[in-house]
Image (tube, rainbow, N blue to C red):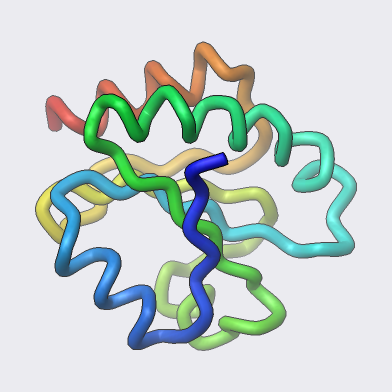
Length: 109
């Protein structure tokens, strides 16, 4: 599993500053959709790590201000960040193939 768990705002900023491509998932521990999506994202993160994409997870209950800054209204919500800019957003679960495709679109945005 190659997922980085974001501890706080500074941690998030460091991840964004130090990596060109970041796939961010905003999730909630109590969310059944997030729980179902976890193994998919975990498997995808291993493949994406080989392609230079960092996968980061943000718990909306622990990082409420960050979730608010990103206007997260549902979980899971994914953002693809390319060179410190959000280039894609997706709300809801995806298959592993869809996650990989989402990341590839983000890399080319």
